[in-house]
Amino acid sequence: MSAFLHAIGTAVPHHDVHQAFIGWARQQLTGAREAALFDRMAGRAGIAHRWSVLPQTSDPTGPDGFYAADRWPGTAARMDIYAQAAPALAIRAVDDLAGKVPLNGITHLVVASCTGFVAPGIDQIIAARLDLLPSTERVLIGFMGCYAAVAALRTARHIVRSEPAARVLVITVELSTLHLQATGDLEALLAMLQFGDGAAAALVTGASGGFDLGQPFATTLPESAELIRWTVTDHGFAMHLSGEVPGRIAAALADPAFALAATGGMSPAAVDGWAVHAGGRSILEAVERSLDLPDDSLSASRAVLSDNGNMSSSTLMFVLARLLDGPRIDQGVALAFGPGLAAEGFRFASAA
Image (cartoon, rainbow, N blue to C red):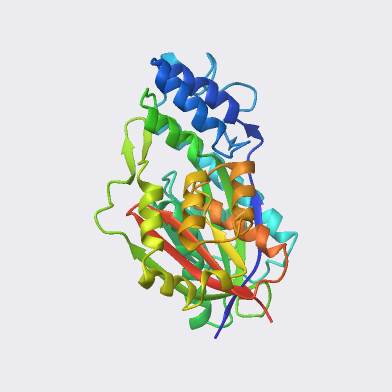
């Protein structure tokens, strides 16, 4: 029994905060050497835009903004915005999906989000706003980070393979810009430089169409748990993204056992569709170097990074959406990384 990813709808907020953040972050650095390094890294990040649910009428870090210096917001204030803005952005992604495929008869809802908490859960809020049947089975995947899209699509695949008539709506929604931290630490500022807000929605069923979702794979790198952390604090969720991450990813991809699991024994050169989580320029370069990929193999990932930055779990969905709109793929591999340090993915191919 196969499971098929038919289409993906996407949505981002209307407020581009990338340049405002760069200006604010540079002011937090007191040393000339650190400021120069930040400028160089920001210029090489490959990011042109990052979008935020914070009000478009102001600079979020300005005197009247959400992050005004004299009243740095606590976690409760950030979660208040999440409770309202996350379902709204998710619904916009569903509306985009509905313009591509019929969404009648949804039997299961799988939602992934790691940038907020609310109860009743965001899955229940979304189900109610979509007027799904009360009998709709729901799964909420929380706090897994950037590879949560893999977990969500893998869950949908398992559901469809066990219940062939299932119609599974998969949603990822992340509001990363709710978690700006007051810090002058260069590594922390470079990590925050990557992240933006976005949502995606997909339909997975047993009927042929779109991408045939193949075998999943996963691994956790040894002695790497401290490299990516997402800590709940009194002032939002603090991200720690070590500069060692690209090197550790490169080492993992060079392991023949992992390469075998990821490609199913194929040479990486035989893969004609790479959906790699756009976690940052250096991560994409590490993947390219380790697998010796042609220069244009990760063009979809680079385009998503440029247009949106890293939207945590939604990022991979945006990459897959671009590939769905492109040429036929006979041998595809989706790959994402996140806290753990873990690497997860699945193989896929265009439906016959």
